[in-house]
Length: 87
Image 1: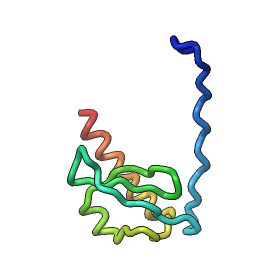
Image 2: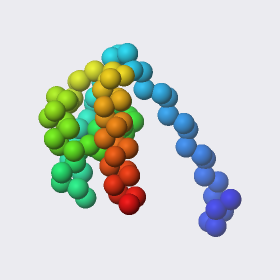
Image 3: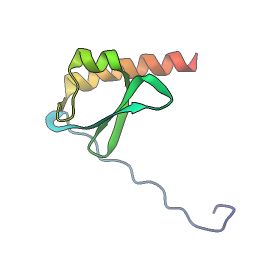
């Protein structure tokens, strides 16, 4: 129980995003704290933040199908970015 006495429900675990191309990118927004990156959402789930160069290189636009190959390519950059920020 929290200090205010209210019960806070745990967040529901998000549904896995299908990688067969049936899901698509629904939002691409600039990150206010890092002008070189954009935030990508598929459905209501935030996939991550990638460099604008990556967005251009992969041709990411709203409506781009979310595939396994695209998820792997974006995942590699996210891992590199997280490692860079942690160092």
